[in-house]
Image 1 (tube, rainbow, N blue to C red):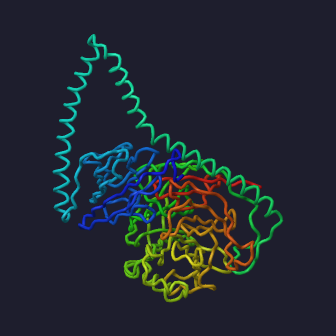
Image 2 (tube, rainbow, N blue to C red):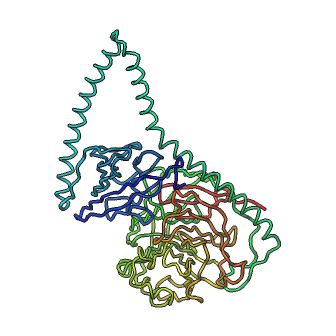
Length: 531
């Protein structure tokens, strides 16, 4: 979404964050849209287990700041009141998300003057909860007294307005203007979002049209290399076009982070990075729409911070981010069978030691072994399987680190495709890491598309960089990036607001399309076309 609304730059505002641990932080509000949450994509990131990855959003509409709840776990509160629609913020307002307290402060003298609310840092969880309850009770009494006072004022105004006073007409006009101003306040954010959506849609349509035309011109008669990892030789004649509007996933709030088509069923499996011990089945119809409720499937094992999922024959694999040493013990990857009719899993195996395996065997990662994902360290966000029978391998797509401005893909060779998938059955492929030019972005998901005979990649900003648009790419799987034909080809810009992090080529009732899920509990689809 555009960083400016109505041509105005946001005036200076800050957030004072009091965490349940007693720690306090200070964050500046920059840009027209600022997301609050525990996820790495949120501009204001809060380390609170009760805060959703995307919990709330602060919007600057050209004059005022407002806050909206983004289906955060437990809701969002301002001065003790739950918000169900965008609410204008004033200096001193206290925002509560999870067990954290955020005080909104705006430069003195700017619009949205002080509300008179005083903020104190909590002293531990117990003190925080007691303070919150006391503040909530006081606020309710204040609102009630204020309401009664306003009712008396309104009665007095009405009496004056109906009396034969020479000021009656002026007073009626003042009340009419006041009502208009109030209505405009409620419409400001809606209008800002409509303008932003218009810009996004126009951009997407323009890019899709341009890319489609350029593909027809530059790829006509082109050939594809048949080296290792070339995925079966000749490229497909099909292309992608027609990105649909995003829709909310029905049946709950899901921080969808990876997706894969289910064999012999009309649906997908996706992972939620806040649910380490579950996968989720979502039925999909031939129109690319959700067909029924999402079914949570217990795995029986835990994968730390699940980010990607793929299919290996009839077996499914879920990978975590592998961003902490704890994943070596708790399980970085889980492999299982899934029965669609009963929505159950079986033969579950947890692969431990995967992070160590990568750091020990990939030279490009060793320098980042002791860095966290926030500082650019190892962060796996996608997993795919190369179906080439002559070159079976698992491909990991990394959000971090980024080398020389390029995203990294780590190919892992499957030693014996018919043997159980264990850490002993894996070996590093050559080269150990492939650098892909994705315009400075990193990988958010990767999946192989048998219709296009290429890998599809969703890219977004690295965790160390400011948030940008998300982009869809095609890549033929070749390691030799000196060959222009082997370099990733940009296909479309994706809806930034849905935070797309999962992609799954899908076929339902003879209809084929690419299904996309987002961290904002949303989904969309892209159709195939014949050039």
